[in-house]
Amino acid sequence: MNNENKVNIKKIDFFWNMIGTVFYSAISFFAPFVVINILGAESGGLFSFGYVALSQIVYIIAYFGTRSYHIVDVVYKYKFSEYFANRIITSIIAIIFGYIYISILLISKVYTFEKGLFLYVVIFSGVIEGFFDVYESELQRGGKLYIAGILLFIRTLVFFTVFVIVLYNSKNMILATACGIVSKFVVSILLANVFLKNEDDLYKGFNKNSLIKITIEVFPIFLMTLLDSYIYSSSKFAIDLYMNDYSSGLFNVLFIPSNIIYMICMFLMRPILTPMSELYHTNKKAYEENFLKVLTIAISICILIFVLVLFFGKSYLQVINIITSYKYKELMDSTVYTVFMVTLAGGLFYTINTPTYYLLIIEGKKNNLMYMYIVIFLISIFTSNILVKNLGMLGAGINYFAIMFLLNLFIQGIKFVKWKK
Image 1 (cartoon, one colour):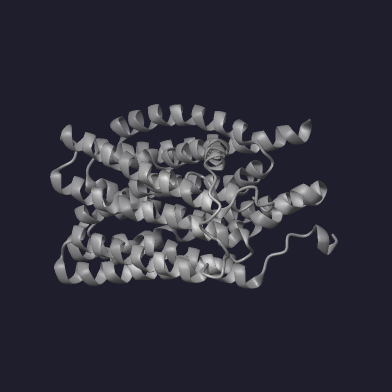
Image 2 (cartoon, rainbow, N blue to C red):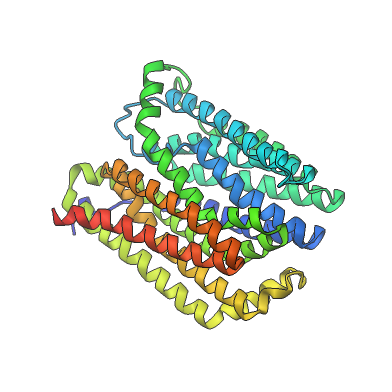
């Protein structure tokens, strides 16, 4: 294949995107364990649900699915100021949604006051990630993905450092989370403007009609991203409703490898999205060849990981048992091991979805994906609640695997059907 038909990725972009994403994934892994060891399993479970699941839904609303559109807008159909205004509006909507959701469960007494207060605070972590992604999207569109990786790394480091210091000294998870979030926001706003200070008229040239057009054009992506996020976390939300914070924490511990694998897949995908978009518009044959390479690599990695976990899965659970100071006694039970393997398999199917999903967006298949996500969303609402209510954590694992398998079948189907035409 000629060089002009290849997806060219800058080494510095790849490196810093990897550092930022891997570090963010690592903190998502270690932060709950810090809480478990300082405050106990119940608090660790609550932190895991709030920081990983609920905060992610709020992040998706603030994010609005715009990055996958923004970074491939290489002809600058819309200005940064218009994407920025869109992100302010969606971030406000995210806060309103989060507060309404938590308030309903507080009023209905599903949540205690302390749990509700913590969740009120922690959702701002997701809002901040969603908001500052607009800066990172602009940097990537301008060929400076490495700076976006640096910003993510610093933002995550500041949050985690402040969070751990305050938690260790105060033993107050709400205070520690609030301090970490405030620190992250201040550092993020300063650094974002420093790295983009040389951009001319960054916030100027705003057009109201363009803002409306962006929202309309991106809405299908937002809707399916939101639905995808719920589908991915439907088992966690069902556990939160029908079980307790202890069970939520245990399930999130089992879920960690799936989260990490997905994050790694994302860091591999992000650098190639903009060049793949350019290739799609200039050489479709080369685009398809590169797509097959990316999909083959993703499948190969997932198969390798599954085989390794078959051999070392129990050792992983034993290590987690030690890290959590044996606070989750069920970790070595055969049923829990089954849940672990089932969720891992589901996570691998979800990871294989990722390259096809983003490239289908480049191909303009947003509506096909949106209809598919609506169907699977409705199925997941029904299955997650029924299975968790009747089978507990095992039901959560089975639900996750079945939904991820179905999702993968549909997404790959959309792509392959196109090939047959």
